[in-house]
Length: 517
View 1: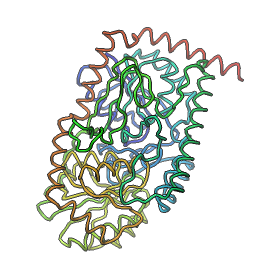
View 2: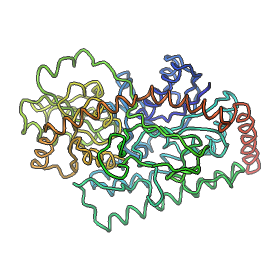
View 3: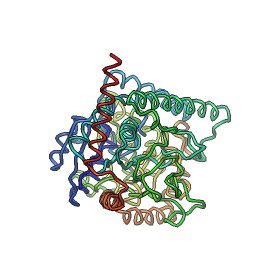
View 4: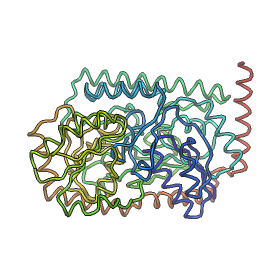
């Protein structure tokens, strides 16, 4: 059985997909990981086949061994970042420019931040679709896999495989609401956490920008389909383009009957009906599309020696805002100061990031005697030692906290973080605060919530539930079972047949380009 794992160059998304790749290989699959060249060494050291595939022009990559082995997260901008507390990033000038635009917008509140992300989206998520169509066709012809696994937010990859008519499964690293159901716009939170009061005018402006971005994506999808000679295959709802054979969620199942506490199916995203079409509007390869909530997407890591026993020394709290948002030193500092006022005996660890060494040194000086500020912290491993955690609501930080049963104070800024924060609030796993309006009284209430017996019991209960979900190993097992069952019922193309399809369509786009030059 052959699998192709197409992983984007965002370490927070690469990590969970790589974990599934390793687990599938351990289960006997012949696995190829296709990603940016920066990941070749790590893939090949794990004994897996690597092929270079440039999915995005921008990237979020570790620049030192410290970043490797960290947890996963759903990214600060177009992808939805930071399972390690303050990983390093690299990127071209335009990427840094857009990153600064995003950070600047984050000071102006959630609506401005989401609007800025929306305007960046075509560059972030659909940078080179024609090249991906060509490259994936050639890669499929070479490898002849039975199935591909694609990051849900790698729309260029999903579009290319869809236009080729090749079988794939979507892996959804962010919140399941990132797959919009009919009537919802991508990137518009279906429900806001209670601390955010969004006026009607701001909501309307956000929805208007989201609708414009969706229309531009649909137009771009159609242009690519025409260039590839298959305009009839252009999907009508680009953000709901899922997969031919199912979806794996990097998230717990909060729906009723799955351990959730809320009515009506919870906030866990799309619920799929019969007839080959899910609530997300996506067409699948069978009348009973597969879906699986893995619960988490990381391999638990050992705690480095220098941090062992910290809980025995004093109760510890971790404050982290992820890869990009760790630049918000004002929020890191305010959070640390308020928590120290509430509990002077707490040991506070702050992940300050590596992008700005001078700013990091200033933050360390300002927090002397209050908190220990580190450029990098082994977040997932540290959480097992923490009383509670303050984070930005990235899926990686959320799932790592829940895995270890740690209550959380969530400070959401962007992307799917508002949906994650809503789940924390709704299911009593901690508290949610507006990061741009931190207040000592609200922090005290959040602190008391996290210290409360009921909150801790709920976190321990959900820790048991997502551990039973099985994470990457269970996701890999489901994936392999899907391949076998689909092949047995002839709902999945044979490798040879798919190869011929890829070859034919690759020739089509090549001919189209030749005619256009």
